[in-house]
Image (cartoon, one colour):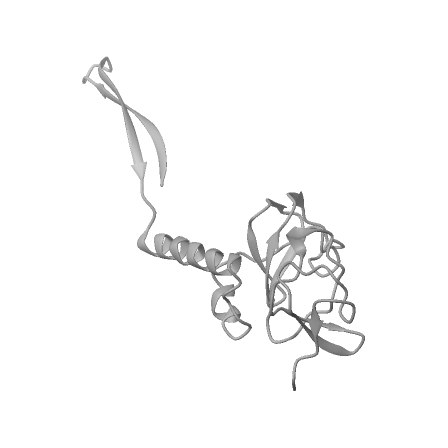
Length: 163
C-alpha cells in the first residue's frame, strides 16, 4: 500500500482558478502482489523455525528476488541464489567476489537445494548450524546434533548419518 497526495484544481472558462483541494490517494496492491507478500511472510517464518526441507525449497525460491551483483541488500532479507535460499546477515552492496558461498559472514544459507553444502566455520550465532542441518566435511556428510552448532564436524555436535 502506498499513499500520495493529489492537488485537484478547478478552473473557469476564462482560465481563473476557482477551487483547489488537496486529496490523499491510497493505492492498494493487486491481489497477486498481496498473495506473494503473504506467501513470503509464511516462508520467512518457516525459515526462521528451520521447517523447510530440501525437497520444498525449490517450491518457495520463486517467491524471492534473485541475488545480483551491485544491489544494496539489508540484513534479514532473503534472496534466491544458485538454487539456494540465502538470508542477508549484514547490510552491504553485493559484489561478484562476495557470493554467499565465499563470504559466510554476510549470508546465512538456509537450504542448498539438491545438494549438501560444504562446512564453513561459523563466525557467531547468526550463522551457526541448526539441529539436523547437514554439511560435507573431509569427504563425508555430517548431521548436526546440536542447535546453534559452531563446532567442526568430528570434534563435537555432529554425527555421520546412516546411508
